[in-house]
Length: 96
Image (cartoon, rainbow, N blue to C red; front, side):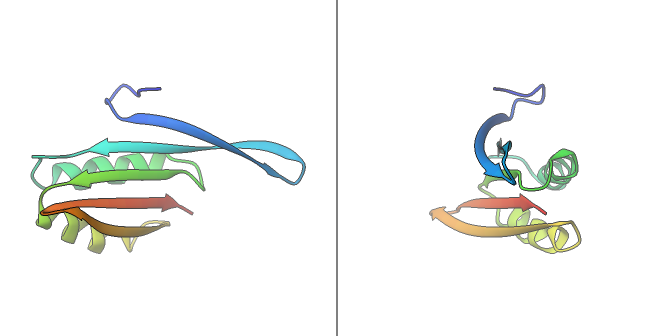
C-alpha cells in the first residue's frame, strides 16, 4: 500500500494475548534531499506511527544521518543505522 506522501507501507501480523495484531513497516526514500527535509519527514512519520511500527529510510547524505541520530534520541523510538553501500545509509526506526 502507498500513502499519500508516496511512502510504502506493508503489514506483518502476530498474536498478542490471543488477539491478532498488525504492525506496519513504512519506507521512506530521501535520496538527494537536503536537511531539514528528511528530518521533518521522519519526525512526522514516527509521530503518526503506532507503537511497534517500523520506518526504514535510506539516504545518501551523511548530514541527514548525523542530524537524525541526534534528533531521534528525543523521540519515543529506537533506531539502527547501517551503511549499505558507499555513501548510502539505511536507518531503521522502531516506534516504542
